[in-house]
Length: 364
Image (cartoon, rainbow, N blue to C red):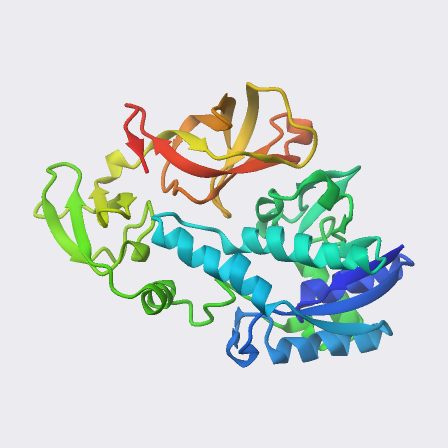
């Protein structure tokens, strides 16, 4: 097959491209320039997509003997990922920019362009597996990225290749070292690539400006502090609340109301969630019949829990078998096959809109 290898400049995409070459595919490498100021997107192990990364990707392509190009998608990335990230926080939600990047950039903009140029598939260094067209978890549970790929449609998966899903990250680095790739020991990028210093609150403050409001304690309804912007908080957050309540018990963010700019906090016993409601789901295969027994993962690094999935006015109502904490609107609820023999298969996902306690109080 004629395939396009997305090469970020890291070790994962380098080895994915190499394995595609080894498999006999006609491979072309492409690096995505995602920022107009690419010198600012790498700081040690943070960030990605800098000029340094482009050079690293080109060196690997040269060693593999494959054509290599740089595609400028900075405007598309800003509109679909960065602007969306800011808008979601301004609306009191907690987005996942990696999921949005996979959806809008790597498997929409890139795949669309690749197919228009006559490529059959796009190869990436994601740690996930494709088995007979089904998206599954990586064999390396600690590096599994199926959660951020759960938004992909069947037609996108049909044109995707994930060569790393059946090997561990340690083996990936071994392969890179065996081939003499300079990126073999290169640190993985962390956090949010367009916030290389890791200061999300500072980035949002510079972008959105000061939007002060009250911090209210759920137990008493009393205002116990002030904040500079609801965007500085996420549901489940404990540290950095900037308040002191008389009983000295730890407080957690329970809810965010952007219209009144109110952040509601409460004690740990109030943080448990028994049910979530979502927006319109996307499915990685044919839409399943509902209701459905499944496992749901509510955070990128969360633990899946059994649940019942029901239709709910165009979205989903997901009833959890075990209470969960830190469930934030805007995050993705990714559903997995409950059958132990196939429990690593991704069924689909939907964005969390509201979460409910056992007593049915709605959290926005």
